[in-house]
Image (cartoon, rainbow, N blue to C red; front, side):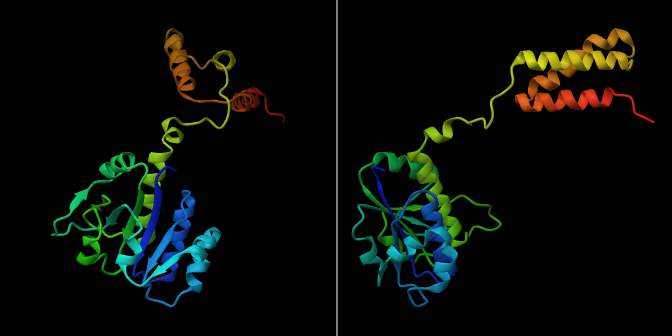
Length: 240
Protein backbone atom coordinates (compact mmCIF):
# COMPACT_ATOMS: atom_id res chain seq x y z
CA UNK A 1 0.00 0.00 0.00
CA UNK A 2 1.39 3.37 -0.98
CA UNK A 3 -0.55 5.11 1.77
CA UNK A 4 0.38 4.37 5.35
CA UNK A 5 -2.72 4.13 7.49
CA UNK A 6 -3.12 4.34 11.24
CA UNK A 7 -6.31 3.96 13.27
CA UNK A 8 -6.67 6.10 16.38
CA UNK A 9 -9.15 5.17 19.10
CA UNK A 10 -9.69 8.10 21.45
CA UNK A 11 -10.66 7.21 25.05
CA UNK A 12 -12.24 3.84 24.19
CA UNK A 13 -14.37 2.57 27.06
CA UNK A 14 -14.75 -1.15 26.40
CA UNK A 15 -11.93 -3.62 25.94
CA UNK A 16 -14.28 -5.73 23.83
CA UNK A 17 -14.61 -2.92 21.32
CA UNK A 18 -10.86 -2.42 21.13
CA UNK A 19 -10.40 -6.11 20.37
CA UNK A 20 -13.13 -6.01 17.72
CA UNK A 21 -11.46 -2.95 16.15
CA UNK A 22 -8.13 -4.80 16.02
CA UNK A 23 -9.83 -7.68 14.25
CA UNK A 24 -11.49 -5.31 11.75
CA UNK A 25 -8.17 -3.63 11.03
CA UNK A 26 -6.43 -6.94 10.37
CA UNK A 27 -9.35 -8.22 8.25
CA UNK A 28 -8.45 -5.61 5.66
CA UNK A 29 -4.68 -5.83 5.82
CA UNK A 30 -3.84 -2.98 8.21
CA UNK A 31 -1.83 -3.17 11.42
CA UNK A 32 -1.31 0.29 12.93
CA UNK A 33 -3.54 0.72 15.99
CA UNK A 34 -3.16 3.74 18.26
CA UNK A 35 -5.09 4.09 21.52
CA UNK A 36 -5.48 7.33 23.44
CA UNK A 37 -6.07 7.01 27.20
CA UNK A 38 -8.28 3.91 27.33
CA UNK A 39 -10.71 3.93 30.23
CA UNK A 40 -9.74 0.51 31.56
CA UNK A 41 -6.20 -0.62 32.48
CA UNK A 42 -3.93 -1.70 29.66
CA UNK A 43 -3.10 -4.43 28.60
CA UNK A 44 -6.74 -5.48 28.65
CA UNK A 45 -7.88 -9.11 28.84
CA UNK A 46 -11.24 -8.47 27.17
CA UNK A 47 -9.51 -6.75 24.25
CA UNK A 48 -7.29 -9.80 23.82
CA UNK A 49 -10.26 -12.19 23.92
CA UNK A 50 -12.31 -10.36 21.28
CA UNK A 51 -9.37 -9.71 18.95
CA UNK A 52 -9.44 -13.44 17.99
CA UNK A 53 -6.79 -13.78 15.24
CA UNK A 54 -5.65 -10.19 15.58
CA UNK A 55 -3.98 -10.37 18.98
CA UNK A 56 -0.70 -9.27 17.40
CA UNK A 57 -2.40 -5.96 16.55
CA UNK A 58 -3.30 -5.56 20.24
CA UNK A 59 0.26 -6.40 21.30
CA UNK A 60 1.76 -3.81 18.93
CA UNK A 61 -0.80 -1.09 19.70
CA UNK A 62 0.69 2.23 20.78
CA UNK A 63 -0.81 3.88 23.84
CA UNK A 64 -0.87 7.68 24.13
CA UNK A 65 -1.89 10.02 26.92
CA UNK A 66 -3.44 12.62 24.62
CA UNK A 67 -4.70 13.08 21.05
CA UNK A 68 -1.99 15.60 20.14
CA UNK A 69 0.73 13.00 20.62
CA UNK A 70 -1.29 10.32 18.80
CA UNK A 71 -1.72 12.36 15.61
CA UNK A 72 1.64 14.10 15.39
CA UNK A 73 3.26 11.54 13.06
CA UNK A 74 0.47 11.64 10.47
CA UNK A 75 0.45 13.94 7.45
CA UNK A 76 -3.32 13.92 7.18
CA UNK A 77 -5.94 13.09 9.82
CA UNK A 78 -9.58 12.21 9.22
CA UNK A 79 -12.02 12.23 12.11
CA UNK A 80 -15.09 9.99 12.07
CA UNK A 81 -18.21 11.35 13.73
CA UNK A 82 -21.90 10.46 13.68
CA UNK A 83 -23.22 14.00 13.76
CA UNK A 84 -22.32 17.25 12.04
CA UNK A 85 -20.47 19.65 14.33
CA UNK A 86 -20.69 23.40 14.31
CA UNK A 87 -16.97 23.98 13.86
CA UNK A 88 -14.91 25.39 11.02
CA UNK A 89 -13.90 22.03 9.60
CA UNK A 90 -14.70 20.47 6.24
CA UNK A 91 -17.22 17.62 6.46
CA UNK A 92 -16.80 15.08 3.66
CA UNK A 93 -18.71 12.07 2.41
CA UNK A 94 -17.30 8.56 2.15
CA UNK A 95 -17.03 9.06 -1.63
CA UNK A 96 -14.90 12.17 -1.25
CA UNK A 97 -12.86 10.47 1.46
CA UNK A 98 -11.90 7.77 -1.05
CA UNK A 99 -11.04 10.43 -3.66
CA UNK A 100 -8.71 12.13 -1.20
CA UNK A 101 -6.94 8.83 -0.52
CA UNK A 102 -6.10 8.68 -4.22
CA UNK A 103 -4.89 12.27 -4.17
CA UNK A 104 -2.57 11.76 -1.17
CA UNK A 105 -1.10 8.41 -2.18
CA UNK A 106 2.22 8.83 -0.42
CA UNK A 107 0.94 10.36 2.79
CA UNK A 108 0.75 8.94 6.29
CA UNK A 109 -2.96 8.96 7.00
CA UNK A 110 -4.62 8.70 10.41
CA UNK A 111 -8.29 7.96 10.97
CA UNK A 112 -9.60 8.98 14.38
CA UNK A 113 -12.60 7.54 16.24
CA UNK A 114 -14.13 8.83 19.47
CA UNK A 115 -15.32 7.11 22.66
CA UNK A 116 -18.47 5.01 22.52
CA UNK A 117 -20.67 7.24 24.69
CA UNK A 118 -19.87 10.74 23.48
CA UNK A 119 -17.78 10.66 20.31
CA UNK A 120 -14.90 12.99 19.59
CA UNK A 121 -14.75 16.34 21.36
CA UNK A 122 -14.44 19.62 19.46
CA UNK A 123 -10.84 19.80 20.63
CA UNK A 124 -10.15 16.36 19.13
CA UNK A 125 -11.81 17.41 15.89
CA UNK A 126 -9.69 20.56 15.73
CA UNK A 127 -6.63 18.33 15.31
CA UNK A 128 -8.04 16.70 12.18
CA UNK A 129 -7.99 17.89 8.58
CA UNK A 130 -11.38 16.52 7.59
CA UNK A 131 -14.46 15.07 9.24
CA UNK A 132 -15.98 11.92 7.75
CA UNK A 133 -19.63 11.11 8.22
CA UNK A 134 -20.73 7.53 7.57
CA UNK A 135 -24.23 7.68 6.08
CA UNK A 136 -26.82 5.97 8.28
CA UNK A 137 -30.56 5.96 8.83
CA UNK A 138 -31.81 9.08 10.63
CA UNK A 139 -33.58 6.76 13.09
CA UNK A 140 -30.23 5.79 14.61
CA UNK A 141 -27.10 7.62 13.48
CA UNK A 142 -24.52 6.39 15.98
CA UNK A 143 -22.50 3.28 15.15
CA UNK A 144 -20.74 0.89 17.46
CA UNK A 145 -17.04 1.81 17.55
CA UNK A 146 -15.85 -1.38 15.87
CA UNK A 147 -18.58 -1.12 13.23
CA UNK A 148 -17.45 2.39 12.30
CA UNK A 149 -13.86 1.17 12.07
CA UNK A 150 -14.73 -1.75 9.82
CA UNK A 151 -16.76 0.46 7.44
CA UNK A 152 -13.79 2.80 7.00
CA UNK A 153 -11.34 -0.13 6.66
CA UNK A 154 -13.54 -1.65 3.97
CA UNK A 155 -13.75 1.60 2.00
CA UNK A 156 -9.97 2.06 2.10
CA UNK A 157 -9.35 -1.56 1.15
CA UNK A 158 -11.80 -1.31 -1.74
CA UNK A 159 -10.12 1.83 -3.07
CA UNK A 160 -6.69 0.17 -2.95
CA UNK A 161 -7.83 -3.16 -4.41
CA UNK A 162 -10.34 -1.98 -6.98
CA UNK A 163 -9.67 -4.82 -9.45
CA UNK A 164 -10.93 -7.35 -6.89
CA UNK A 165 -14.32 -5.66 -6.96
CA UNK A 166 -14.64 -5.05 -10.70
CA UNK A 167 -16.17 -8.37 -11.65
CA UNK A 168 -17.61 -11.37 -9.93
CA UNK A 169 -15.84 -14.69 -10.17
CA UNK A 170 -17.85 -17.82 -10.81
CA UNK A 171 -17.02 -20.62 -8.41
CA UNK A 172 -17.65 -23.30 -11.04
CA UNK A 173 -17.43 -23.48 -14.81
CA UNK A 174 -20.76 -22.99 -16.57
CA UNK A 175 -22.13 -25.76 -18.72
CA UNK A 176 -22.31 -25.34 -22.49
CA UNK A 177 -25.37 -24.11 -24.34
CA UNK A 178 -25.51 -27.43 -26.17
CA UNK A 179 -25.89 -29.28 -22.85
CA UNK A 180 -28.80 -27.03 -21.90
CA UNK A 181 -30.34 -27.60 -25.34
CA UNK A 182 -30.06 -31.38 -24.89
CA UNK A 183 -31.69 -31.11 -21.46
CA UNK A 184 -34.63 -29.16 -22.92
CA UNK A 185 -35.04 -31.72 -25.74
CA UNK A 186 -35.00 -34.52 -23.17
CA UNK A 187 -37.62 -32.70 -21.09
CA UNK A 188 -39.74 -32.04 -24.16
CA UNK A 189 -39.69 -35.73 -25.08
CA UNK A 190 -40.87 -36.74 -21.61
CA UNK A 191 -43.58 -34.08 -21.54
CA UNK A 192 -44.81 -35.29 -24.92
CA UNK A 193 -45.00 -38.81 -23.52
CA UNK A 194 -47.08 -37.50 -20.60
CA UNK A 195 -49.31 -35.54 -23.01
CA UNK A 196 -48.39 -32.36 -21.16
CA UNK A 197 -48.78 -29.95 -24.08
CA UNK A 198 -52.48 -29.09 -24.16
CA UNK A 199 -53.75 -27.73 -26.43
CA UNK A 200 -51.11 -28.98 -28.92
CA UNK A 201 -50.97 -25.67 -30.78
CA UNK A 202 -49.49 -24.03 -27.67
CA UNK A 203 -46.59 -26.44 -27.50
CA UNK A 204 -44.20 -24.12 -29.37
CA UNK A 205 -44.76 -21.18 -27.01
CA UNK A 206 -44.54 -23.46 -23.95
CA UNK A 207 -41.20 -24.87 -25.10
CA UNK A 208 -39.99 -21.32 -25.67
CA UNK A 209 -40.92 -20.41 -22.10
CA UNK A 210 -39.12 -23.48 -20.77
CA UNK A 211 -36.04 -22.52 -22.80
CA UNK A 212 -36.15 -19.01 -21.35
CA UNK A 213 -36.27 -20.41 -17.81
CA UNK A 214 -33.19 -22.58 -18.30
CA UNK A 215 -31.46 -19.87 -20.33
CA UNK A 216 -31.54 -17.50 -17.37
CA UNK A 217 -29.91 -20.01 -15.03
CA UNK A 218 -26.15 -20.28 -14.61
CA UNK A 219 -25.93 -24.06 -14.52
CA UNK A 220 -22.80 -26.16 -14.11
CA UNK A 221 -22.19 -29.57 -15.74
CA UNK A 222 -22.88 -31.22 -12.39
CA UNK A 223 -26.22 -29.44 -12.06
CA UNK A 224 -27.20 -30.47 -15.61
CA UNK A 225 -26.47 -34.11 -14.73
CA UNK A 226 -28.59 -33.81 -11.58
CA UNK A 227 -31.51 -32.39 -13.57
CA UNK A 228 -31.23 -35.18 -16.14
CA UNK A 229 -31.32 -37.69 -13.29
CA UNK A 230 -34.34 -36.03 -11.65
CA UNK A 231 -36.33 -35.87 -14.87
CA UNK A 232 -35.45 -39.48 -15.70
CA UNK A 233 -36.58 -40.73 -12.29
CA UNK A 234 -39.88 -38.87 -12.59
CA UNK A 235 -40.50 -40.64 -15.90
CA UNK A 236 -40.05 -44.15 -14.45
CA UNK A 237 -43.07 -46.24 -13.60
CA UNK A 238 -43.56 -47.02 -9.95
CA UNK A 239 -43.03 -50.65 -9.02
CA UNK A 240 -45.91 -52.30 -7.19
